[in-house]
Amino acid sequence: MWCSVIGPICADRSRSSSAVRRRFDRVRESDVRASTQAWADSVEWAVVVSTTADSVNVRVIGSPPIPETASYRDALVAGGIDPDGVVVEFIPRTVVALGDNFVGLVPD
Figure 1 (cartoon, rainbow, N blue to C red):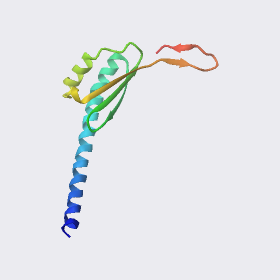
Figure 2 (cartoon, helix red, strand yellow):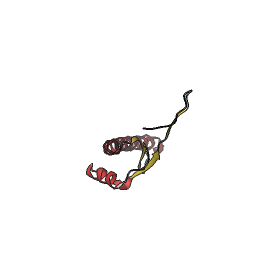
Figure 3 (tube, rainbow, N blue to C red):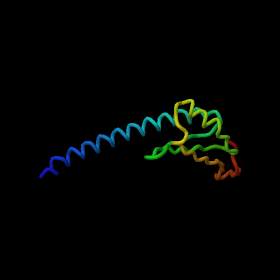
Figure 4 (tube, helix red, strand yellow):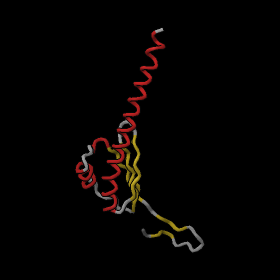
């Protein structure tokens, strides 16, 4: 019988901690996105950010060469973000026109 009383209490705590975690993840993702966007704008790359339980995953997309990362790490630290929780994936972008007037590679 006591399980029927304790169960809902435990479930409420679980939902509460889950809500706190989601809020923390949204704030962390927002902070990383802001620092990343400023850095990516300076190197002319685009940004996609997503959050997992363990890290913030960042994808930056742009024309080769891949930019150096020391300035990105510095931008995260300057924004109050621990870079150890950030994973970045660089995706070199090549644009090809495939229309009737095929021109091959299109410069950015």
